[in-house]
Amino acid sequence: MSYRLHLPLDFETPTEALAWFDEGQRQGLVPADVDLFYPDALDTAQHGFTVRDLIVRRSRDRIASLAVRAGRGVRRGR
Image (tube, rainbow, N blue to C red):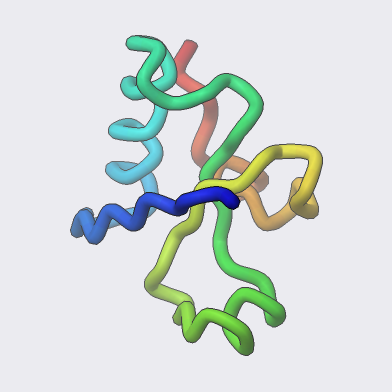
């Protein structure tokens, strides 16, 4: 059995959410093998996520183009 942690945090932009996420990774609070993604159609259908939601998933489990930092002018700040 596994448990999921849902953190309903609000950010003005995906860039701000990514900065918070990256800081958590730098501090070792967020695992290194995960990234911040926009939900795909399956996430939307199964979990009710919207285009305003961002999700944390293992990088290997997601399409790289759905990553918040991919091609949207956002770069990893490390």
